[in-house]
Length: 212
Image 1 (cartoon, rainbow, N blue to C red):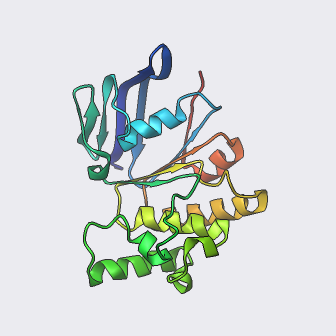
Image 2 (spheres, rainbow, N blue to C red; image 1 turned 90 degrees about the vertical axis):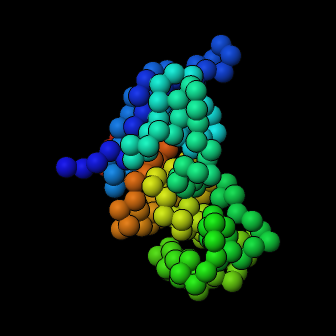
């Protein structure tokens, strides 16, 4: 029987008179990719921010691996949640090398961690570019660096917030194929947020549709 990795129960968040998320229930099994799809303004980003710890719910509770992450009265800080994030904009440090960017989320640096960075860069096909700086890379390569950085600390959950939207059409297709193979290869639990229905159907083992 597959264990539940992430659980949201009756989670709500408002911004003044605007409803971000209302009474959201969600269960994500370990090792599965959930595609969260819906139009702009439907609550996808608010849901990610709640899971990541950038927002606190006004009702309900969020749990990761059975551990309470947040409710209206308490919230685990983002850096202590064991969650990796991949953004649209890559958010890489231009003054650091590819390897240094990939290692940025590690709390300690030793040979075993350096080996972990090398392994992850090899997994995303960037081992030969470890000493390059991000500005010297293509858009697709920068996205792979961002993915490696999210995966190096062995997160319990990976959040991907429309990670391919800034890439051209051909590269988007190539990257989503590569990223899905990588995530499934290491049995990662992930949430992939998109407004693209085709991408959602391709990426997700499970599909959640948000609207209004």
